[in-house]
Image (cartoon, rainbow, N blue to C red):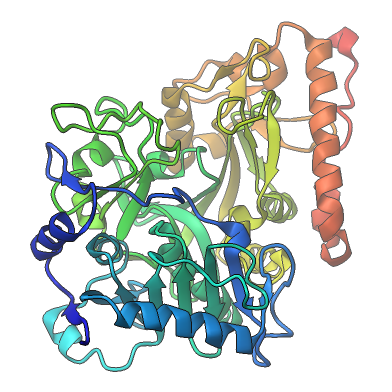
Length: 524
């Protein structure tokens, strides 16, 4: 007997089905749908496969991120997924758009067994109007989510119980063995990361917002650097928190919702996000208190607790999420070594270097076995989702910056006064917000600057509401010689990491690679 197909159900109906069919699913005290993704509580990068077809073979940056899968193996993976989907009593189908700008959007169809997955993607993509839905037609891309059943490891190229396979030629993604909803979201981003750059548009793993004068800022940053928090600015309209495209016309959001980290969420510090976790939102792998409220500090299930909600749930969000050209590009990093300035103004060559480097650092406690800060480099602040070589995106960014006279900034939301666990303390959010305000109102650009020796980073000498001694990191360290040793150690990490890009780097990028901190400690 064929499964019952539920197509584009309303959120209330999806909630009803989730409570009826999904084990352990309940509503929080605010009405959000609290769900579990079970075994995998984050993406499974080693399970990602890209099908080696003749139309993309020469373009794809093959390697540890884009692992090859043959067309024959893909069809076997696909067959296993479809057999499972066809064996279910209920299927939930969502037809949505990827891309807020109708000139560039793609029609996406998701077929899944879990109502929570359907509601998640309804939140994350852009819902068609009734008229658009009636005329939706054939999708441009289809996701077959059979995550409730495992992958067949006897299939050549499949080496675990999970398999997330992407076929550009067939325009399909197949998911087996993992129920983590983020695999669908990032699958769509990966598709856009190939299709749109080949058309000359820069696809960005970044958040974005817009000021009263129509000025647009984009925020790049890896997990934990503040990308979602800082883009949700009550003084500006939120365009989106994660995925955007910069075209010849301006910027648009790929998505129609937000997928925010929930750990440590507080009403006092992030009121807009906190208030968005209500009916229609999805709370993924969160622990609930006895009164049904979310314990945002409980990471016993996973540190990667997440909340998904429509963009419209954020007060002052920009809908449709389409805006003009970018005025400020902001790279966010959590520097656990405490050597990077809180803010630096970058040249275009430095912008390409820092973009391709995509630096942040893990601190002890974030992962098992991490005893001291560990550098993390993710090209273009979105390495797992890049299809083309990172320098392809870096050159596109440089062209956009130059053509539209946009400024580029490096903002350290990490440590100051020392490294993590060695006298350093995390940069206060109010200081980072003051620096971002200075970027947006033009105050920082007008300041006098000094340069970090050996690194060439230009740092302002003053910023309103920020103690001047905080702006130059060496001034916050009690032991100046230890600062120099540490910053030189970090510089060597950057140099070693960049070796893999050097052969395709421009002279401007090579010149931006940090060198030894050339300053006498006796004068510090």
